[in-house]
Length: 166
Image 1 (cartoon, one colour):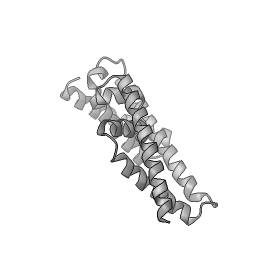
Image 2 (cartoon, helix red, strand yellow):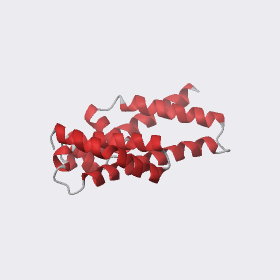
Image 3 (cartoon, one colour):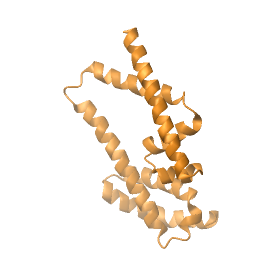
């Protein structure tokens, strides 16, 4: 699928897919965001999309998975905020944990960081990470394993440092 064909596909399918996804999610805005993100991913896979019998289905599935993933993250965040047993200091610790994670991520090699972010934060499968990063699946698995191990060490070291400063 060349650029012109992709543009035509986008123009023809975007509204229809937003309508379908908004019916599934109950939110037009959420549907627009997820379908737009799915089309960004479709652009990366446009050479294989042209061979598919229904590229609409591929985009719809990706958009749905994105919506489900967002819903899960929102539900978790809402649960934390609504949990009556969560004291203000626990919320502060949660922010500290996010800060520590970002700091730890910045300290691991770029290829490990990219694999961790794509897989765990963007919810891409190992195979999708391999496609996106253009490396074999085994390489992605190794990067994820090494990255997790490095993060565990860095985050453990960081929590020890924080405990000593208190």
